[in-house]
Amino acid sequence: MYKLIASLALLLTACGGPTVVAEARYVPRGPDAPRPQKETDFFAEFVGDHHPTGKVFRLQGKPVAVDGPNVILTLVKADWSTITAPGGKEHREATAQIMVQQGAESHSVSVNQGDDGVAFNVRITVKGAGEDYNKARLDYLPWVDCQVDAL
Image 1 (cartoon, rainbow, N blue to C red):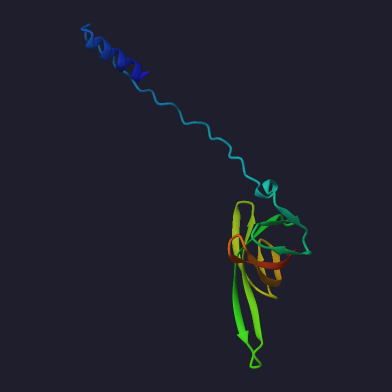
Image 2 (image 1 turned 90 degrees about the horizontal axis):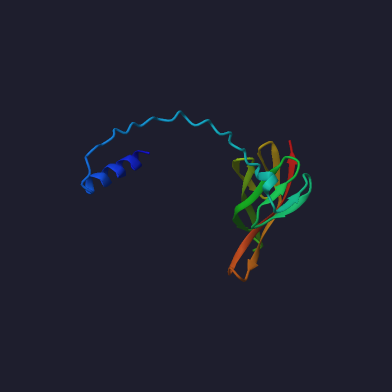
């Protein structure tokens, strides 16, 4: 409304008309009513693989949902430790960094191969680990076989 009155006053002044400027008053609006925020259910919207609790599954590259405790797991990285025995035999062990998401919250859990970690009242056990060569990426992609149990 203010812009309309200001433009009209400018137009009348430019055309040689009488100079009458109306005083524009700004009337502030009341505060907008708070909108209820819709809480996003990340688990319901997840379209990847779903696995039950208590079963061993492979976690590699893509996130995986675990039904029951309704968590989503993502393998962030795997760090490798190599020990060479006096006989020359190498023993490799992995430490998996796993992102656990429940709702809008997430926690990072570091789990050694053969051990378990806890986040959001679920126990994540890493049963095994390894790497697969990806020809397209010319890189090794880590994987872990893990089991999730509700506490």
